[in-house]
Image (cartoon, rainbow, N blue to C red; front, side, top):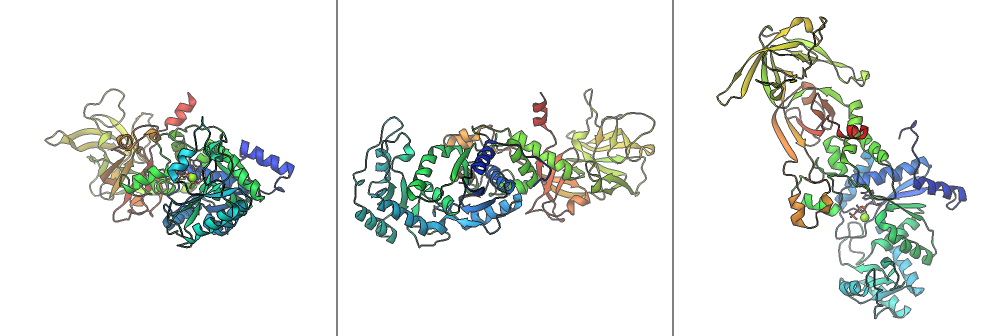
Length: 560
Ligand code: ATP
Ligand code: MG
């Protein structure tokens, strides 16, 4: 991505460098990103995508996109399409290298036959529960199945009949014949195939036996000529099995390397639980801006660059840890600060009338679009006698050190003039309905050359030009920093933040905001970064999502 940046090394690079030096893979680097199409990609997947595609690019290698579609019950084409859209949006391209584990079903079947012939796999009639009971525990060895010593001929015959559909779901499985007393439970005759009379989103009804993850994964890696198979730490104990299958089959053997998965505070990354949020309508779909999915973050206004930069900033580790979500927000702000155009929006409007300003007059004042980026240019904004300001920027009886507007106080209106509050009106309930002020014509542009200081700067909009809009403010979906610790449904529902979405319907915005294309990102002065909603926004009904507020807690924490 970034040509001039030097990527810091990490333990995975060290391993690849060693292999390149000793010629294990002939200098080749072939990686893959292997999502299961059973849900939308989330920020943890984004980390894995950036890692795999990033390493492939750095080593002049390639990265395959492989759908790990071995469980027809949970997988759907909608997910395949969403995954492809999200990877492209993140900025990565797999070219022609789009593969599906289901494309290898025939080869995997042949490999299984090979293991049966070598006496290394057998058909078992035990039920799922019995298999679990026979497996033993970490302290106790497992027991051999009574079907373990079937002859090669019988196994070949039964396996073929499994494939032909002669047996019901769960009636038989194919297992590897390894060692029921192995200290590593993964090596206690793991199941390779189960019977599932289910429709597959690609192979239709061709198959009624489906490979288990451990059986499909390594062999798929091998078939694709993968050199380094990066996976998360939970698979460390599966590596002996990964290696065993490849060694027994005597086929190309990639190196599995485990790294720590990305965990974020206040963020769930279990696809099962994310699916639950969607299915039960706790959020409005996979792309709800509160979701940690790539689609949700995109809709919220996070840029691909922010995600990539964040992914790089967390690095790769060998032990699990939890990253503060504030670090992610820092990356979002850091990017949007450079790229998002500034504009004014009044979220909670109250009228401000400039008593000494001529009625009917409009002045067009100059405003820079982005002080961080002069090339973003300037725009003009209309100023007049009647303005909207934030109701929260006025207090009748302010405390000391209140720098916003109050009776008798002077503030700067951004890009416009200094104004001094002269009086205000309230309704019967005591709410302020109109504020009156006078302006100083000598302060045009918001500057005074007589040296007098005003501390407060307010944003504002001309009443005649302001456009109505809706704004959606988001908070964490969960009230606790470790939502994955909820053990059951009751605990899960209890930690859902009921106030994670607040909709403001009476918002006033600049014309540039109302007229912006869906998906455009802005900084609303003093309010944070916002994005025109990709689904609901139109000039007639402008809708903005707050991506992130301006407040930066993480950088402050870091300085301490
Ligand atoms: P499930 O929750 O269904 O087991 P998963 O999160 O492991 O799913 P996959 O679709 O199997 O999802 O993951 C695709 C790839 O993304 C895998 O290589 C996996 O290691 C990686 N990945 C998933 N979650 C994370 C995470 N939190 N951090 C880093 N990598 C991740
Ligand atoms: Mg998985």
